[in-house]
Length: 309
Image 1: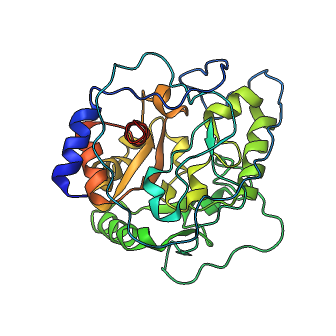
Image 2: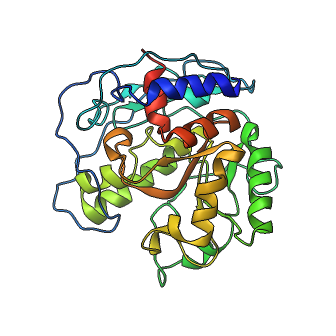
Image 3: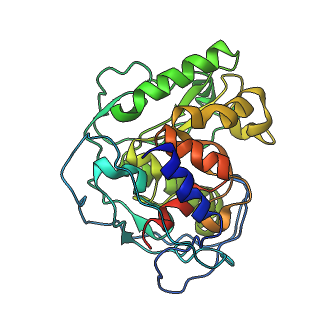
């Protein structure tokens, strides 16, 4: 989409509603939480979805979405911030920018991007064999925990879709040149790996707490192959009071849109993203849209909701 068209979209979005399709009533989540706070809720495992992706694999460029009409200002958490398992209506591999995932909408357990490559070299991605287990990045390991040192360098088997690789490599090169190197802590996650990750957080702090700080299987943006958790190589980003205020975190927040990446879960936006603030989690959407969203301070999830009206 031309830059002007994106600007038109965002002008509409500033006054638009962020709510998604209505779902069955469910308790409203809290608007913020610490990933290591212990809660008392009793874990209740969720059913694994069984549907398949809604399209055949494709690696064509992202199509340009159309402007959306305006609507009333949002009040309270969006309707999709309710626990459910509804297949996301936009699951085409080529239309990944408009694929929305939250507490309600999810991908199938068979969704695997067809064009994954190494996030560090652009070479072939070798999928792990056997049962995957959640690593230090998935469980937000702290200094002194086993495998914490792995968070100070790129994850060895990190993968991303080829459609995002060139811009990712350019961004990482620019970050190094600025003195703020970007470490890739976690990138593509399979459905099975997300099962382990979410179950870990349920064990740590209970089901309700896990919902706020982790995604249930099928609901994670990492399964799309276009989301990355970044670090600075000095410490895990969640160990800082606010990683976005560190030199590397601030550089990324300022320059990521130039390379097509947006922060999925910004501060103060839990009512529209469903999840707690994560200044290290970015998703690739392309340069034009990323810069338009950044300039207008509209979240990707609000933009995606507008495309359904």
